[in-house]
Length: 117
Image (cartoon, rainbow, N blue to C red; front, side):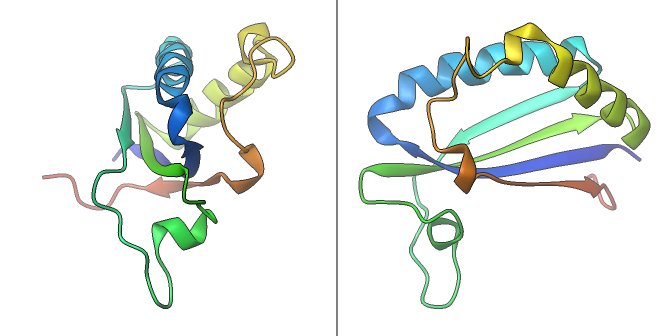
């Protein structure tokens, strides 16, 4: 089965268009290095929780929106090689292409796909 990288982050709501531009550019690079699919979603109905929630997890402020994203790879091996190439790609240099968000509050992880219907 495929391998999936998942991401949750708080983005300043005022930066929505900047984020879309950044995410589109990044998605092209993911796909260039082997990703099958890149999905970016902008929070619309993301409630605060009492014990845990997406907003709590990323310490979202009142002027931020939670973004939930994932990248599908054919395998973990392709993903690992793709990430290595991406980290070496000058288009990913934060000095020339800064993220429109606080990367310290980005939550991410890699997952083995176990159901895909």
